[in-house]
Length: 317
Ligand SMILES: Nc1ncnc2c1ncn2[C@@H]1O[C@H](COP(=O)(O)OP(=O)(O)OP(=O)(O)O)[C@@H](O)[C@H]1O
Image (cartoon, rainbow, N blue to C red; front, side, top):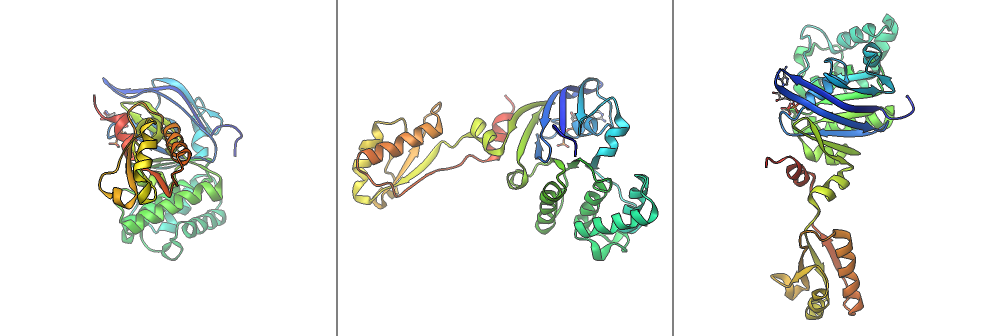
């Protein structure tokens, strides 16, 4: 594993004729990260992956993968693994034959290639199906075989373009588990392009959201949510006989509190006016309640979701 960031892109641009697919991509991804690479249809994700894996040449800009500059594409190809958006599989080969073939392409001798193929089949949960023809594999098995192929050269950076597309819930869970293990057990960096935001919340350390070929949000899931779609509503629970006193205490803060609905049970609904910073307001509300002698039995803010943040930064204006 190279020291330093796994991926760095600066001002990367690619146009297809008059369609600018990637306008100016700036990216820095620390080694070992599982990065969610998000964006609406046509945002430029697949094009960016093709650029970073040297399948396509950029119009301008520069990048490094595992410290290797884009001017050395052959060297980059040895350091990356790719599951393309629509991977093709030879139906008349077995999973093991196909993986062995790819291991040999990366220069392994026959015995080594066979060992690698068997180990990878086991890693992706296909150990007992290695000798079956790929044509007999389910879609989920094919996706896992495709991920195994992406790992055949023990890559530093693995690019997965929609790996769980079209899979049933069991297949999706297996692929997600596999992605987590690629980073944990191999120390590899994973760039995961997907539209399934719940998957991203589950496995990704960080996210990048692209829109119209540009990065429009970047950070941990929590950071992106906080910046783009922070919680604006919440609830506090106090002893029912303290509701009036609690309302009085909160009246002096920036949070708007009401005792609608479940007030008789001691539950107050809270809402934060636009522009009020969440952490500050929450701390102020709890301090005011405690200073007024009102016990706080529960306090929650309805967390903004990644999907809210995604819509906030990508919706058309
Ligand atoms: N080979 C091509 N020739 C012409 N235009 C292309 C080509 N490939 C992509 N485009 C255009 O470039 C833009 C970005 O496409 P790209 O496939 O990179 O987006 P994406 O974010 O991967 O989308 P999706 O989520 O739908 O897969 C789109 O407007 C698309 O129509």
